[in-house]
Length: 144
Length: 435
Image (tube, rainbow over all chains, first blue to last red; front, side):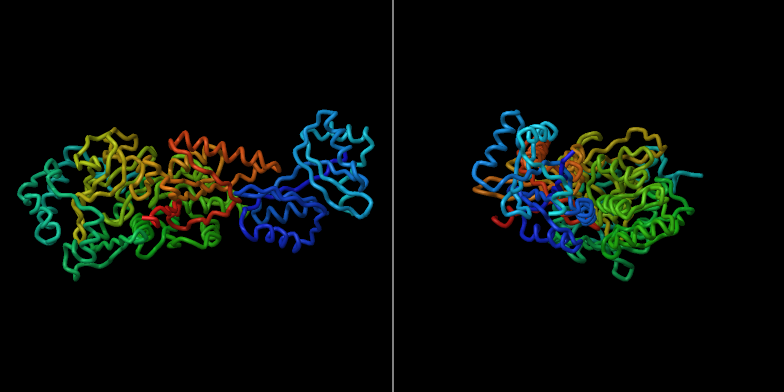
């Protein structure tokens, strides 16, 4: 299974909330690989991929944050026009419903990585493999 | 072992109680008329003299006292004994700008502490018990009242006062407290902290709690009982009449027995002042028939409740009052609809949330708005925004069903709403700023 664990944190939509989370992670020596913030006018959901998921979750929970861990897919594709479109076409053709995605940078300047959140990980992973898309493991990401 | 502190009074027949009340009332009215010019004027204006009051049946002839009277007569205007005979004052917080100062003679303190002792014995308290009192001590009546009652019963009394919750739990585990006295919101917080500190109910010896001084719901009772592994009992009182112990709950947990040998209750229509029969909802009115220094006659409490003389399985014959259904101080009128914070609390607990919330009422473009901030349930966190928004909508929908108006619900992080160590602040009404 190539699924990667993503941590979601509930944050108040008020000044300094994100800074507090970052401070906590910094103090625990956690390095972030990918991050996205979805916000409403009341609250935000901070989604992160960390180099040490268990430690990050423990730190956040100890500080009374609401935290949930979700399995997502991570892919690496060449940094050239039309590549993401190809990925979406594959998923679309297979009827996989995409919830959200966000990009992050890896170590290579010739490829780009994406977090993909779908309703059916197994189905999506099979489709991507068949379509020749490189998927990243949690270990791959931690070692980036 | 007796389950009563004063069996003769607590199980007295209705006829004997009426007779006792009548004797005491007649003497009290005379005492007040002769010693409190403020109340004498009210009686004179109404054309009532002490001779018109021959028994409890004549009670309705007396004029009411309200909180406004207490403010007008502040500080000494309702005092019925020389200061040389008074030994104590207690006072309300005065957060609404209406501070009440009540006076006590030595005998008043005795009577009050005996009322509290009845409450402690009714929940199973004996001199073998360790009673942890975490109501505030000082001007607030909670601490001194239960402290005095606990002494009377002979419990080992822990005069903790409120606050410093970890220390409360340390004493509770180290000394094996068996009875807890505090506000229900603080009891809930103590329970929450206990579990956070890694303890379970096996680590404490609590068996009962006496919780009052603020309105609370049956749902909250169940939460506290579960979290602390106890039976949770209600207690009622107000500074104006003495403090906690005016009424107390027994093992049946279906309302509070009023110490009617000291306080005669009436239920009135709050608009007309007309006395209503037992069983009807109305405003609770008390007449203190034993207090010497600060004897209020027909004092309007603003608490809405029901009285019942239904036979109680505990054997007490003292009349019972329901949990107050609301207090005009808490009642919000939003777009013409009466809303009580307790209704919102009920919805939250039903939907799996903690009873930690803050209601903000405001007026925008001449329309009242109500916003309810609710601590989200960490178990229900989703990485998808639409799921979280769905939770807000579901809560708003449930509140709309309960309240009849449409509130805006905002999820906030766990533990972000300030916990209370005394009376919880549940409502911020900004409409007053515009008036």
